[in-house]
Length: 123
Image (tube, rainbow, N blue to C red; front, side, top):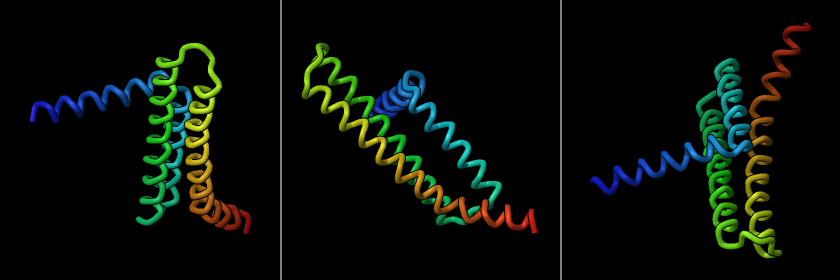
């Protein structure tokens, strides 16, 4: 049991490190808070909440894996190396893909609601 608790403490420390050190993670968190506020204001349904939460987890997880890969590559190959650069670019590309698809899901959920609100305000 002690080992399990220690593992959770390490994981939480890792999350804190990424939040403190990675500007992109901070941006993802701000966007997540804005989505949470929008979801509450627009009273999105359970399925839409689940999709938003899934997107948060996917993007946050991808960002953390990207940071871990970049840190490990920097440790192993502190000098510039083509393969090190490729690994870092691919990891960053994975985060970008996750963020793009999350944004698409967000647009599918929120654009109709904003559109309806705008039409109801001007009609």
